[in-house]
Image (cartoon, rainbow, N blue to C red; front, top):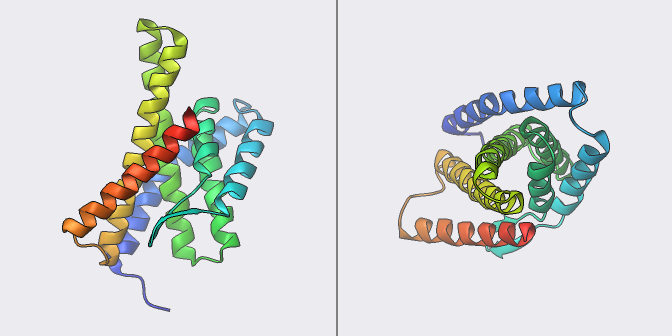
Length: 194
């Protein structure tokens, strides 16, 4: 087994630290009863089962159908709760896939950060847009902004991970790969919310 580069360990630690507030908020939401456990459990099961069969979009890139469950969670659950559900779903998927502990920790934390940020943005945009436009239009607009946020944070984390592993030089080929991956994720995510 190849040793993990120091930059990757630092990135993983930073990602875990950034994920902790969302995970703690999620645990508090569950503990105080702000979250319907049947909804959270259903979304967790969907996130896990849908992620077992990823969709290959490029030679080295897969999309997870579990984004459907994550996007539903962003709309239905508070930011901390959806981050906790998404992180647990990813944790179960990685345990099932027998990933290394460092990969499990990084992946679960990265999903918690991306989902938590997107859910927080969704709530803020929905609250502000609901004042100016019809509630249905505000929900759609907030969903679109949440998708853009989720994909943007996810791509940023992938690029940072690949850079920390030393497997990505920011050349023309890398920018094309990032562009294709981002387009595929946006297309998949927008299809999920429509």
